[in-house]
Each structure stands twice: as structure tokens, then as C-alpha cells.
Image (cartoon, rainbow, N blue to C red):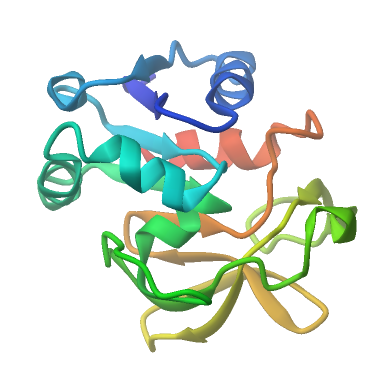
Length: 188
């Protein structure tokens, strides 16, 4: 199994690490830029994207993550992670890594009280995936090279462009590990 990590600055990184471990990986909790060395992939978890941006200012995370991707590593972002990976962020506008040719709108489904769980048909999985949408963002525009792997109410919610996978939902909360297992399989 290739070495993988979970960005452990903020958000539900522990649930992602446990999901990856249940899939046979030995994930590392990544808190420093230097820890990216030798990894094949990194999960950027959900949480609060503006808080995560503030925490990332302590080290050159943007440069390091862009270099990490450029050297062939994979990224899997969920919720706030999808926001950070997208080319453009709206509502409000904020800085991003711009590694995914997508425009995303923050908190597009409403407030915390509007959060919900559902099952999604995912093109790369054999069975529906149980997921949670918590103050979820929404992809409002995708570039031509972005593949939609799942949609909810006709809106893309899981996409892939090359070695970047982004979900506007939380797969780690429901205990459904199929998406994590699939992502690990793409690293081989």
C-alpha cells in the first residue's frame, strides 16, 4: 500500500485516518510541510475553509501542496478540502490551491440546520455510498477535463481531474469506506 497522509491542521482528519486504516492503509497525520515527502497521496478533510487557510499561513503550504501534486502525488479533498482544491471560490471569494478546474460556492446548501445525509450512486463504486452534507459547498462550474463521478439533485458532488478528487460531502462520517478504498486503489 502506498504511503498516504491526512492533513491534520483542522477538521475531521481523525475520521479520514480511521477510514483509510480500515481500508488497509497506515495513514500519517500531516501537520508540517516536510511530512509530505514520500507520500503518494494526501486527504484534505472538511472543516472550515477560512480557518484552515489561516492555519496554513504558518508554513508555505500552498507552494508545498502544488509541488506535491506536480511531482505526481494525488489529492482527495472533502467539503472544505474541495473548496481549497478548486480554481475559484465564491460566497465569499477566497484563496485556493487552484489544482481543480472548478468554481465552487461555499455553504451552498444552507446553514448547519440544513445539513443532511443521503445515499449517492457513484460511477466508480458498485453500491450506493452513504454520505453527509454539512454546510456543503456546491460546484457551480467545471472545466472540460473534470469528470463527474456522482451528482445529487442534478448538481455534481464528486469530481475527478487527473490526480485530484473532490467531494462536496463527507464520506468519512457515515462509516462507508468504499470511496476511500477506491481512492487508495488509484494510487497504485
